[in-house]
Length: 533
Image 1 (cartoon, rainbow, N blue to C red):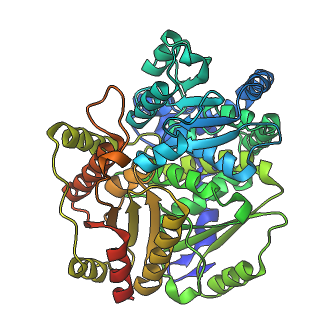
Image 2 (cartoon, rainbow, N blue to C red; image 1 turned 180 degrees about the horizontal axis):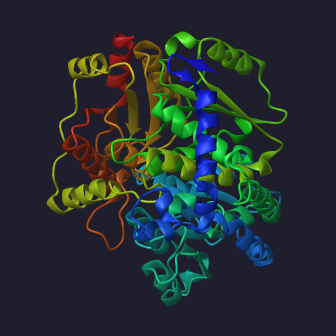
């Protein structure tokens, strides 16, 4: 793995020796906040390390989860999870990776405020929702999107006594926990408060949906627990899979290889969306960070700059000779490539923990606190201001402005496509075609995500990370009233909320001096992309 900056492998070995000499892995397990910050009074670090032992704790809850799943599948055919970010990404990975076992209800993840997405997940009358169970998932119990989803779903079920169709997943003593008690919810699963949202995959946030899908939850947890053991306090850093990965991520970023590019087998492809949030929100702060690149198809070495680190996760039986050949070509061209094989899909339990531990290690190398998100509130505050003042959106760019925007993106930067559109296959296809064309032409890393979920995923990196991002926001004209969806108890609709979230984020990016442009409609962007190419 030779690069012009030296041997990444050699840097990783040296880093592991330094980690061992400083007893870093032992101190992480001892919950020592000075591993990341010299100020030992930083409470949010010590209070966010419950993920280290949650797999062992949750194994005791497997029988109760199985009983609950049997109770639910006797009365329901469909489950709608209302969540955002850390509350929705792990369930989506599990749903897309495993699907529902025979005899278990289907799971739909609702994490878009686009009115078309809301209506597709929870259809308006006369659709019958009597056999639909709603999971309202929010760590804080105050997440705006989850609250709006709940209000809409509660109103749609109606009829009184609708609480029996609702389940809460939240921390103790949150507004959502109180709502579950007062509203007669079927159940409230209260998670340990010392686990941050993006580190919560192996807590109730991930495991309640897993059980309802009919997964072998014990098997998933045992894989995670085994990984925790080999990354444990008594394991030398060189022998710890999580420490090795973390050292690679951290030192590659310090060497300029800060575009972490995932190459994933089809059967576990959705793992990238979970890892994207974990890496971006944990490391993207204080002007530094690692940029996760998920979903970019591999091409020849010529389209890549010297800022890439490739990490491939391969599921047994899904080896692709074409992908292997491209990876070999990338290595020959001097790009570092790290490989990991998964025996089966249940190794996701192992990977959840390995990447969490690696992120913690990378945080020590970058000298940042991986457990906070200091810049996320900016877009939220702007959204509230836009809604309260009924502010008009920023004017969209024309084709000339778009061409200039593309021309101004330098080598070593990244281009983020932020689509405030419903996550539909047709949009997936068109956005991916635009992304690939721009990547190949501009020779820069690209990211692609739907809003508003990106606000809870890569948004922290966009505003708090290195000033190398160029941001292209894609919206559509406001929907006509007949296609919009009201939010009971709120003075705005889902269409207005989505527009305010887009505008709020655009303002936050521009306030920080990030190059950010808004385009209305995919057609204009497609024409501008063709012109740029």
